Length: 407
View 1 (cartoon, one colour):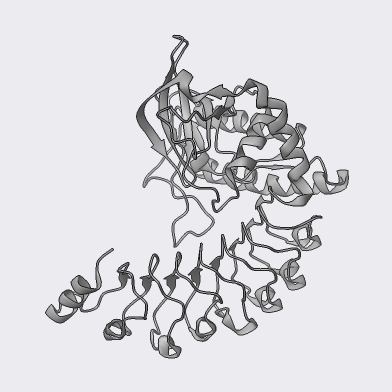
View 2 (view 1 turned 120 degrees about the vertical axis):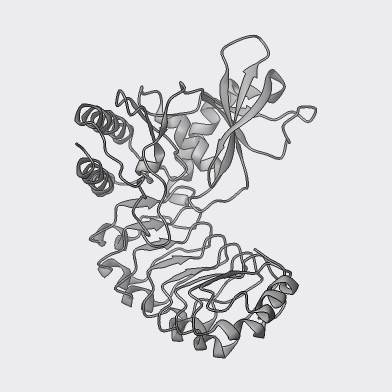
């Protein structure tokens, strides 16, 4: 990330000649024309966090551009020029003010579309005419239906529908041949179950004044995790403080509800309680938080999250190899955790290696992060079964990845 002045200085000095990636966040109100000096080489452009409401029609001059991020800008429609970009495959317009997605605004090579946290009420049928589409992020909008053509999307594997206005499960979801990762919490079709779970645990909430927060243990897309000590001298716990009211997977309320409803399982990380904020406490009372068990030391993520290139596949360390007994134990424990969730009428929604913490020496593992989990109790039994069968595709992908690295 750099200012416009720094970018201009580097451009004039020749330091950016042949640049393939640029990030500009400088309160821009207009697209900087200076960028066209890189039109022949630029592949990744990040204009997030500015004041842009439009893009120029000649943006298509960027013939090599594959990735465009423009999140946190006041766009009210997805720019139509994107549909004329020959190589553009990843488009990210999160947390804008988009209400309109025109039929001709979608690039022909579209592979990954992020429209999280906007005001979209409907999507064009052309979305189902993008055969390379693998990842579709639509959480926290105002959708009540999906384009019928999406049912035929041959490569769509990850779909985020949480926090919309779906009263029933869109039939297109069950018809998608490759779908493996689905988030659908926070819709009218699931909200009653979520509210019941939260209300049932309200009297068991911990008070923030009863915890002393310590060092940061880690962070993810939705929150920061700290070590914390109960003031009564009980064993230390982990405290997850959410970053915002909406994430790519849904809302903190849905995550907390799913975690509480999931119950206890030795290989599943679920909350002990939600945290009741106190105005005089160290924790900001506007922040939502939950208390989790503190995991033993020595656990590490099985892999890293997907990259821009891998899209829907986790990134394992170069040369990663797993001892066969440890790998078999790992997979058996993850299968057990998934079976537990399915038995409780739930989906994990994000069954990935990067959400599995494990000990490589023993194979002991914990499945974490219920941010994309969904409670299916209000859906017909046949749909619940179909969705859980769909999630088994994610489990099969995980098993194949681990087995391919087993020695």
